Length: 339
Ligand code: GLA
Image (cartoon, rainbow, N blue to C red; front, side):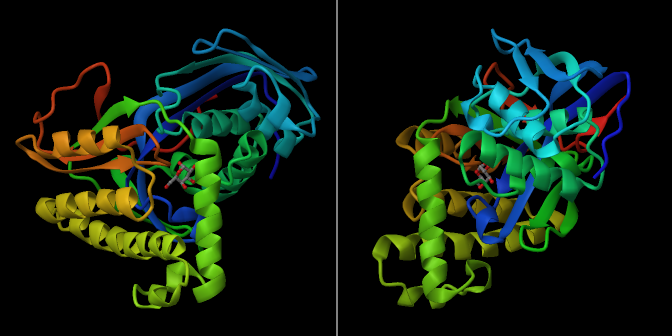
């Protein structure tokens, strides 16, 4: 990894939506996200010995030294994600600039990972998408204390125009799958997320407990989960094992443009998140049922960490009209330094 100080800096970093494969990444499983045409842009100047950023989405600016140990105590709160990256990079020169975003914050479309990636690239972090994503994942964990997986940062760093990314979160290998131009990817921001901190960490711990009994979930079959003693841990494991299978089937159905099957898998995946993994809420369940009942909609599911956030649906073009809280998104290329 290298840092390359330059005068003017401009970086554009997309958000992401996950089509299927939730709560699989931190067990090295499969996910199928895409970077979306909602962006965090950072424009500034490199140099100096502080990182100073303001954001049009936040009242207070961030002002940080180049060396810091504990990003999780930084104020204002949004500065923790910037601080996490600064702590990981330990840059030799600073940055001053402004952040603008069209990614709704707290919606589960990875606004924090987009910000981390933008800051990393602006600070001159080089290397391939995996290197950038791994650094930003460490930054997120240091900033938030949430033991997240690699999906958000890697889909943002590695996005490919017109394609979803089939990511193996163990090997970090990525296979691209075209998303048909005449298929609408609808994202509906239903509620702000709640409870994510402790509940997410509980799920990670429950999956680790399952793995202590039956080994890596990414290699397990549904039959293997039968021997797990604790009922709740068994249910969590069953979600992960079946979700990995759904991701494989979904990638094949997307490549074959089998829209009926895509919809079926989305609804089955949502049920698994709601019942076995308990990361949905009644409001999210209602939103999925409502979208899925609309003419032209193939299927819908909650997307991302859960406990609120967004629902994603696949629909025939024009079936769902865009609104303030509902967008048709396109798969786009990953985060990039424009200058
Ligand atoms: C959050 C995390 C990801 C992933 C999803 C659930 O977005 O940051 O690593 O675990 O939840 O799939």
